[in-house]
Image 1 (cartoon, rainbow, N blue to C red):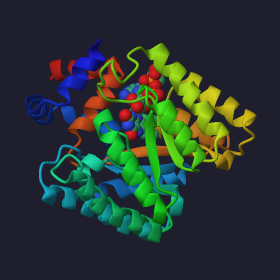
Image 2: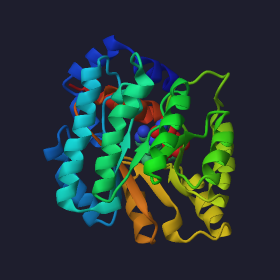
Image 3: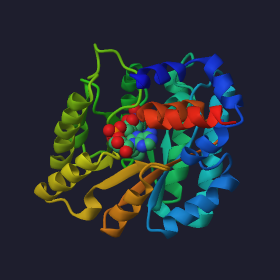
Length: 307
Ligand code: FDA
């Protein structure tokens, strides 16, 4: 029951100030968000790619309130891409972006987010890599999919995320699988009402498998975003049945979660991409990681009390 409470707190400015200012927060945050600047993240990128892992990079920040902040978010990605160009990693390091950070929730937000994300997608393509649009809460998704369709006219490799907990996702998956899209499937990390989303883990897991089957049997490129060992072995089996070779799908996990499993899957010859977040505005991302596993919260609370 803790998960929904933490997700509600992730929207509270008061909690944001409290958690961000607590001196014990930083070491717990570092587990999931291993840097605040490009200079701090470049050695991590080098270390992970040296180990045979691939990356998708997220510059954290989502609750922006002005067009200037949205432009700054775009520029932060452009700065990162300029550094990735020096490392010459190609598709081994791609980008994940949240359109809210590019202004999607502001007035005229759909157009603003498209205008801000396009130069990022162009810059990524210029260094031989690509961008995936993260999925946020369900109210943002029609706009996200429309932006995805628009970007794919010029950059067909642009990916998007779908969330197994939403009722709409099976239909979205059928459409995306038929049009050859790169699609990351995740369970879903936001607090969603019962009118639009499954609420119980068994239902969400079953939906995940149904959607994954659609993606594996379709024409696109499935990206399995999960740490769940059961779903990972089901994904391997579905890929085998669909006749997919190891370079025709990939696994993705978050930095700081089941790191041994990242290395194990890569060593077995799978493409394994680590979603690596960095930046200063980490509150929303961090709180979603706490909500996913109450043990994280207990660890966090214990470190607060022992100080
Ligand atoms: P589940 O939550 O059942 O966890 C399985 C096991 O993994 C747990 O038992 C535990 O061992 C471990 N684990 C999972 N989360 C943990 C945590 N926070 N701390 C410690 N251990 C943990 N969501 C979204 O709504 N939009 C998006 O765009 C994305 N993008 C995204 C990218 C990638 C690469 C991943 C892996 C995930 C996302 N997510 C996301 C998050 C996703 O929706 C989901 O909340 C998490 O992946 C947790 O779900 P699992 O599938 O891992 O299963």
